Amino acid sequence: MSKTFFLDFDGTITKNDVVATMVIKFCRPGWEELNNQWERGELSTEDCANKTFALFDATMEDIYRLLDTIELDNFFVDFVRVCKAGSYPIYILSDGYDILIQYILNRHGLSGLPVYANKLVTGSKGFSIACTYKNPHCQKCGTCKKNLLHHLKGQNTQTVYVGDGCSDTCVCHEADIVFAKGSLLRYCHKNNVKALAYTSFQDIINWLNKNS
Ligand SMILES: [Mg+2]
Ligand SMILES: [Zn+2]
Image (cartoon, rainbow, N blue to C red; front, side, top):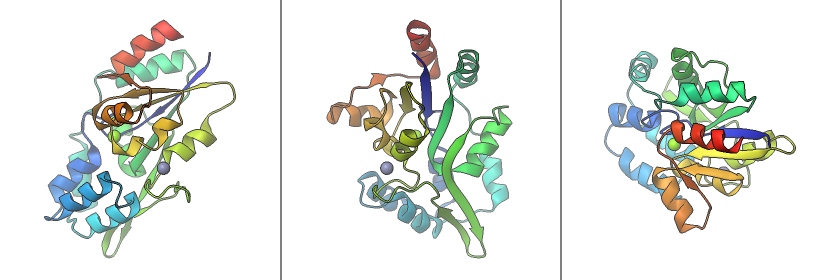
């Protein structure tokens, strides 16, 4: 059966969460409580991001230097090659920022992958978020991955979602197969969502070899 892959970016394609790394490095105190509220579902991504940016002190140059240190999952480039060979579409769905993701992908020669994420807006008062892929029926996501997966999947394809965290809890109910690690795996166990535990993209390559 044909398969279509939908992938989280932060902490899934990358080893560490890019947005969290930025916030830890460039935010004045106060962001932790905002992040906790977001994780508990009390703040939407949009509200959390704009409140966090009010505490944020960095230039675009500072951000790019930090992005230069971000590493990918050791097997992600191989995974993309396997998907190309098997004609399995890949979509990156992220509640992070598209220009930061594109910058990191470009650095690793992966600029062709489609990315659906929030926009980082730069203005005279600093940064803010624009949520182009918001879903009016979802109170949490900036980029609602559930909505995107529903609209991007083709006919007669098995949808496979890969994720690690809080921004994947909405979409994981929608995918046919879920690969989960970290807090997403705990969420899936708690909420009776069938999920396959994984540690790196090598596990997903192995699964594809057995299930293609
Ligand atoms: Mg993540
Ligand atoms: Zn959502």
